[in-house]
Structures are given as structure tokens and as C-alpha cells.
Amino acid sequence: MLTIHELRREAYSDWETTYHVLALYNPAPESISLPKTEAARLPYTNQAFKNEVRQRFGDLRRRSTWEQAAIWMCAQGMAQSYLEPYQILGFMVSPTYMRSAVREHYGQQIIEAMLQFPEVIAILKDGLEQVYRHAEHREERALVEQFIKDGNQFPKQMLQAVAA
Image (cartoon, rainbow, N blue to C red):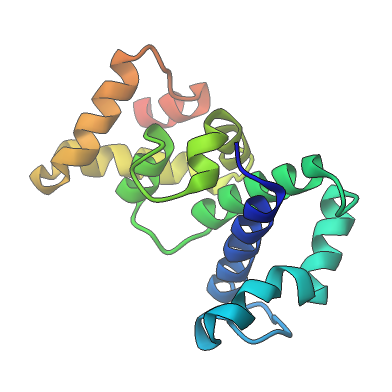
């Protein structure tokens, strides 16, 4: 189980990345440009981040707030990232495909949150096409097949999109 501090750091990292990818204004300096000690304080000092978490998820003193924020921001970061569809598919079918503590601890909740983004179904469809058409994506294909073998199912909307 992740601590509140870990959840807060993970949520901040995903929030900051999403702001960068979507070219949104972040009033704080990017953590990558700061010394580690200063960067580690950003989840506690960046008012814009704290205000958004408070407004969307609730009381900053509660663990449930940070769990919801970390889950949603991880899902949003993946759904709206610049990653290739096969990579997003790999992230979705395997908790260890990419290093994400939130994905590893809140797997099903991350998947459900990702599916709230309308573009994800098309991304996953494209990812399946990539892993089954291109030999260089063997690892991701094996992960998809293990996912299915373990009794997991893809969302119905995705299967309908693949069949179309």
C-alpha cells in the first residue's frame, strides 16, 4: 500500500506531465529543472496543484483524496500521453509493463478510470492492431495473450470497435 506522501508525489508527477503534454500553464517551475530537494517539495507547495486536487477530489488531509487524485491523474496521463498505442495497451494489460506504483497498486481502478476517456477505446484498438501486425511488439503481444489467458476481458466498446 502506498503512503499518502507517495500518492501525493505520484499524483503530482502525473499532473505535471499532463500539464506539460497538453501545454497547460503550470505556475511552478518544472521539477526536472530543480534540485531533487526542491522538486520533492512541489507537491506540497504548488498552489495550482493543491487547488485542483482539493476542487476535484476533496480534503487534502484525507487518504481517499490522494488515492482518487493519483488514480485519476495516472489514468489521464496515459490516456492523453504521446505514447504509442501499443505502449498504452501494454500499460493497461500489465501492471509491471511500465514503472508506475499507482498502476501496480490500483490496477483495476486505473483501467476503469482510463476507460472514462473517449479516445482510449480507439487507442487500444490501434494498440491491438500494432501488436498483432508488427513482429517487433512481441513483448506486448505476449502480455495481451497472458491478460486474456488469465481470464481478463477487454471492454465491450473496444471489442465492438475492433470488429468494425
